[in-house]
Image 1 (spheres, rainbow over the protein chains, first blue to last red):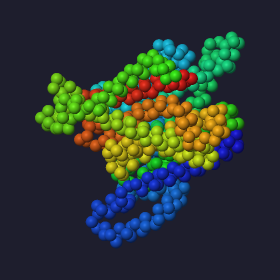
Image 2 (cartoon, chains in turn green, brown):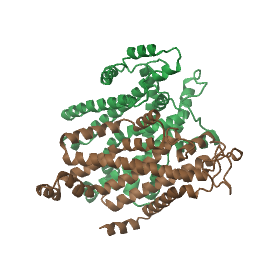
Image 3 (cartoon, rainbow over the protein chains, first blue to last red):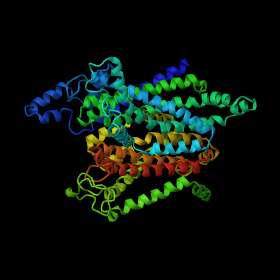
Image 4 (cartoon, chains in turn yellow, blue):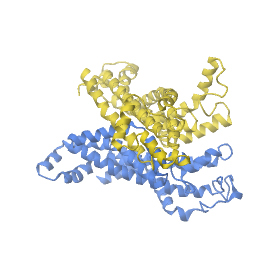
Length: 323
Length: 275
């Protein structure tokens, strides 16, 4: 295990470096430099002043030098200041990250909670009514645009029925409330985005669980268990299920960027104060430091999530370690 | 062999339905400008936000434009983005996957590392940033979706290649002194075509969904040109008074994407009976 851990940790370095390279050079696509927009709108900024700001920010240096300097800073989590309000970028992200993690963990949890039993029952009775119904659901789930589901949910539960708030994470008059009312308020705000985000990953997850379970059921050790006369639930519910769950661990790692990505649209629609919307707003206002920070940090989080998923995978399935 | 596949495909009812719908949509897309009952671009402010009626089958939008005609023309947008984006994805994904899987060595390491990197960055940020910087239009949308969707395909093709590389007929071709490029394209490629075809079909579905989401966010196809996504974006503003503006484009997206998904899964069943 130690060897595997070391190898896997060394793999992280080039991947993280690659993410930083892409994030940095993505900004070079933008027409004009980072301060052009700022300078062009302000009549007091003469070409000389502009040149001086550029020199102060190190923008007159060769591009590789700039990248090197930036890399040196971000290793220490110094992502510079936001060009919009001059606040440190890392603090802005720090404010938004917990909300995004909360939303993602809840929706993955919800999706897993539903996907595992759905996939399980669909697989042990293939071609049954239940299997067919869930297959239809999966196909529709794959094919419907997330934001349209969000809109429909907002019309239904927010506007027509008026049960749930449709934007933000808390109400306006939030501060003076006692903690239990605060918690209830947040829960109500979280419900719709969590449901929509969770349902969008449910389709893929339950499909995956189904095929994983089908594969296990046809293996020899299950037939051996049947031959030994073990009970139905003991065979499927314990022996087969446990083995079918193993590949789900890797899928979890693969799902992370999708969730953060899908989060951009959901967070924007629900005006949810998370990283996705922060990234979207940063792009729309050309807040370069913030855009680079959001891509690097969400990429880094994904890499770490994958890393943990791999370790977990190697831990629960010893066959992986010896490959 | 082809006949067996065709027979099996015909028995897969859902896949046949998907295929039929796609053919109809393709014909509609090609003929759209001649089929539109009204001019999809002409505004008529007197007839703003009309409910669906005999004159306007799917109602009108906030500028009095005929929603049905706009949806029809939007078919063109969606299908062309889907096909072109997947074309780019195939070009990059298949060639990188073939080379990495067959040639192996350093090249393989580099390509797979690149795949890891691309799969870690939430591509939606890349896509949004590129469109915001280079300007949102249909060509940039096609290109950027294609440029960000190849990693999965590369991984798939490489995996297939690795298993085929060791087969006897490839070894035989090598021993016979056949050039690497000939082995790659004449002997290897045809044997990995099945999973590529499945992945490409599902890829079209994904690309159409992405385009509609981008247009919905205002970074895709720009008005007045119609796209299902930007019609939905207007629908969002009139959510409480004009349901038809959200419902019909959603259905259009759902039906189209569903058809490609059904066809893709059907192809998988036919071409790759193991799974």
